[in-house]
Amino acid sequence: MAQVVNLDALIPREDFLASAGMDAGAVGKSEASRTDLTKGEHFYLTLRKPDFQRETAAWAPEAVRDFINAFIDGDLIPSVICWQSPARLTFVIDGAHRLSAVIAWLLDDYGDGEESIKFYNNAIPEEQRRIADKTRTLVNKEIKPWKDYKAESQNPGSNPALTDRVRALAHSKIPLLWVNGQESSKAERAFLTINRSAVQIDPTELKLLNARFKPEAIASRAIVRNATGYKYWKEFSAAGQEETERVAKEIYKALYSPPLDPSVRTNELPIAGHGYGSQTLPLIFDFVNIANRLPVVDASKGRHIKTGDTAALDENATLTAMRNADSLAKRLTGTNSSSLGLLPAIYFYSQSGRHQPTSVLAMAALVMELDTTPRFIDFTKVRSSFEQFLIDNKPFINQLTVRHGSMAKGYRQQKDYLLFVLNLFISGKTSEEILAAMKEHESYRSLVKEPPILTKKSKGFSGELKNWAAISSAIEMALKCDLCEARLDNKSKQLGHIKDKKDGGLGSGDNSSWEHPFCNSTYKSYLQKQGMLSD
Image (cartoon, rainbow, N blue to C red; front, side):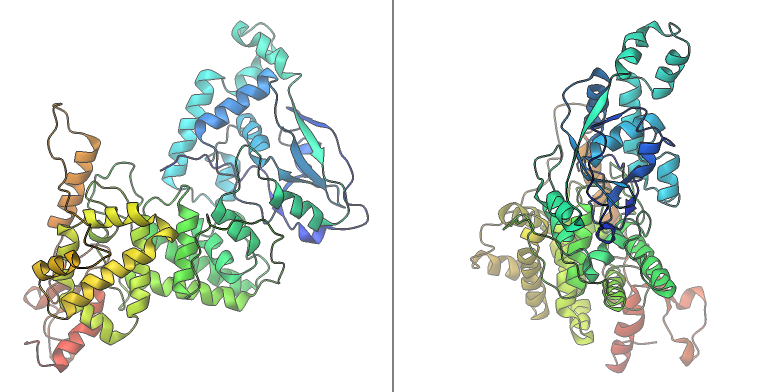
């Protein structure tokens, strides 16, 4: 997973489209100095990002370090493009990463400092903190912190190693270009057509920008940052804002709890992998679309630049989108009575411990396709055999992803494969018969088993082998549901009564049974009605 530094808190957002007026579009200063970018200074106080602009979180730690270095040394820096609003606010159309990198150095805030803590309500993901600390270490080692430069400037000669750089910093500038014109839509078009800066617009981000007022986009923004950061839903009613944030936090917790360590070392794994990184937003956006039965479009195909949809926010539609995504998340995991309680190590991680985001979308799509109690009961009847087949043939998923692509490119093909196998189990086929049927199927005949490499010449264990061991133990050590005999996820298991309370069953150890929430509720009732469950 690409490591990116989150600098989104350092330049505030503001409503851009409401900023047009007779006094807009004036040309401002031609350069921004270190002083201009210091907190509390006049120019700094005018800086804004358009509310639709993508998150300032696309540069690697090394890129932040290199840009700060270039700024101090006076190297050639591409111009930052701005637009001035009637209120004399400086909207950054292109170049937020450049300005934010310098501000981060001055504030010592690489995503975990005072401004970031306030921006994210002290709910900063551990991965974000780790990358921030890595960035700080790189900068402090090779450039030195701003406080050292400040000390040298206040007492010249106290730190001879920095004397020349402090003098150079006095002349450091970031060039500014200004979009002329009173209409904010002109500046918006400038942003959407600029695709030549240090960081290109990510296809998914562009898709979100072009549909930024739509319910699925607002819902995705709320979920991906755990209802912290810029509140794209701030125009909702008080009750709507409260529900948006509450549901977003519930979904985030369901998908990203517990936090995923860089190396798999625990049996407890989150469904959606890392809660911070380049794949997080695309995964959540597509998940929300699947939950709402909306098209999932491969954003890398047919890219085009256009002015965003300016339709008004729809609070009710957004809340409906949030609730649908919440229902789907609860179907996959958790203790809600509808929860299948899928064990992540089986469904969402490769045998080497790598998280598989395509599998999250595939299972989400499969669950949406089942979507009736009878179909879920059919699934539960064969669940144990189905999951063992997935465990025994994990490489098939990897091969499908390589063939069709990841995420939006290949999740449908993976869902079709899962449904193909599931339906054969439901029809009474054995694992051996299913493998034979796959050999006769055009889409699956080329899939082959690839056992993990468990030996190597070096004496130490590789990271891949350690991850394999962790995933294997997560599967083998998992308890099994006493009703369907499939493996339980600790986040989703429930202690049920063997003999129901309504029938006089006691809350005693010899009357207890570990079960999936769906099994504890719907499937148990089904078995009782069929006379298949004895007291």
